[in-house]
Image (cartoon, helix red, strand yellow):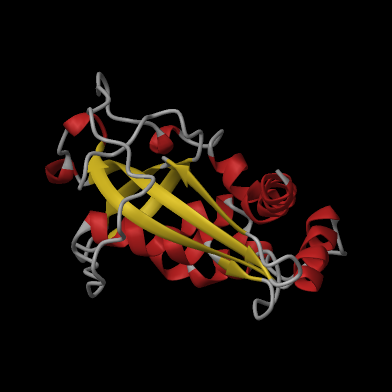
Length: 208
C-alpha cells in the first residue's frame, strides 16, 4: 500500500509538472481545423499496447509521415529536468519537425521570453526532484484506417507510453496516451507536424 500511494503521489506531481510542459499543446487542441480527423473517419480496432515492447530503433525518414510523427512527438514530449534548460526545451527540440505555423501556435516564437511563471516554478520543483520523463511511441496508424497521404495531409493515431522517474523518490510511473497528430506534406515532399490533439479519447492504435 505504501508503494502504491507513493507512486500515486509521484504521478500526481508528474501530471501537474507535465502540464507545465504540455500547456502549449492544450492550446493546440483548440486551434485551426488542421488538427482534426478526416471526414467520416472511424476509429480502427486494436489491442491495448500498454505492455508492448517499443519498436526497434530506425533512422528518421522525413518522407514517411509515420516516422516523422513518432520522432517529433518523442522530441517534443520527453523531458529531463536534470539537463533541460526549461519546460519548453522539448518544444525547441521539435522545432524542425513542425510547421512554422504550428510551432508559433504552441508559443515557440516566444521561447525564452517573459518573466517566471507557474510553469517555471513547477519546473524548478522537477529539477529539485531530479525528474525525467521518457516518451516512447509504440505504434502509429492512419486515423480511422483512412490513408490520405495522396492528399498531402494525414492524421495519425499514436499509442504512446510515458515512463517518469524521480531521483528524489526512486519511483517509476508509466502511463499510456493516444494522441492524434496531423501532418502536412511540404513542397520538397517531406512531412511536418501541423497539429496535435492530446485528448486521449481515440482508443489504441493497432499494432503488435
